[in-house]
Image 1 (spheres, helix red, strand yellow):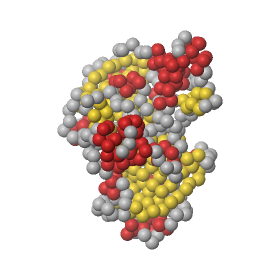
Image 2 (image 1 turned 90 degrees about the vertical axis):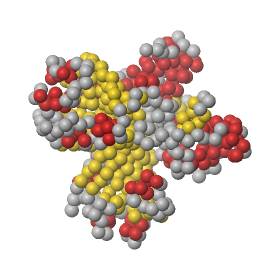
Image 3 (image 1 turned 180 degrees about the horizontal axis):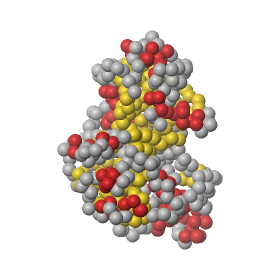
Image 4 (image 1 turned 135 degrees about the vertical axis):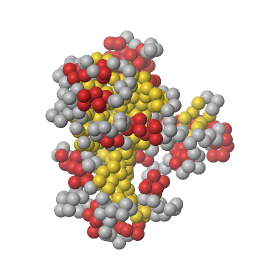
Length: 249
Length: 249
């Protein structure tokens, strides 16, 4: 194994202190001068080490505040919860809502409705022809007033055009119930999960710190005739979310 | 909305060309000089734009080769496949193996077996006391000879100490069958999924390009008495993997 440089050694020590919990969420790291003194290294070495930890999403740095260990305790989403909510008479359930409420936190959202030509990954899942439009409900979801994630649900235009889905206010009973009333209950979900770095627009909208990837969660809902009737694309900042599935034999 | 700078405009144009497929995987971007000429911008502006695309994982840059659009077509993992493989008499199935073989690609792996004090996220899932050891089988998996992902399976020491799990060679029938023979068949899985930036060690081991996050996939297997008997931690470079679950009502 290659010998590590001075700044890698320093980064490694600080990383261990963070992972072990010695430096917990919100803890302030020693100042640059302190680290220079205690580790007998140059200011440049200290800065390289701190920048590395920032890139890994372990700390955030702000003028005057110094370097702070980030709170990495994320919200746990359970995509299977929504399935239970589809049963006749069951209350509306949505993985994110359930998770937020379970922690006693306050959820709010900003909703916009548009008719758009969806991105390729959505168009192919809705089996649209090239250039076909779809209805999209774009939601920015905030927890305790802070932007938390985005959830954009796309629907075939001919199915939802005259329904509550075409109007901006929150749909009290949930879009799934509306689809049901329109004769298209969802019987099957296909969930695709991947991660990537955010686009500049996402960084700005979600107020992401540098070095924070996003998890993309795409759920496609099929009706009993196996027609895709909804594609929901969630963009989940990776430092704030985990996803859990439970499988039984 | 804030007006974007020159380099953001250029990055945005190139990004659209990549997402639309106009510049497909493996395509070469115009040279810096060409971009300066066609967009009437400075070399610095071109470099800032290209660096942004690199950070987003859309292109890779190499001396002399120029800037290449990365192949973002990832391998699709189906974690539910392993469940089918647990049935009596069923052939061994593993999400990753199945996915690789389905594409006609060649899988190889490097296996090491160690007794270690596992990281906190594993120890708590195995319900170990602080400082307790576990057996770990560390695997680096290669596809067509290239490092692809890592999969480390942790087992309670007292259960697997004298079994095939304690020895480095690949276990032909799979570790799940060995656990079964030891009286601990897995009846239930809990899967946790999140993403983060790689550690420097992971970047090196998996030969990651700059700006590539990793997806962490942790599967905990429980025996019929709800005792956790295996915690498998996979580190999946985000540009090479997607995860798919299918749910039925």
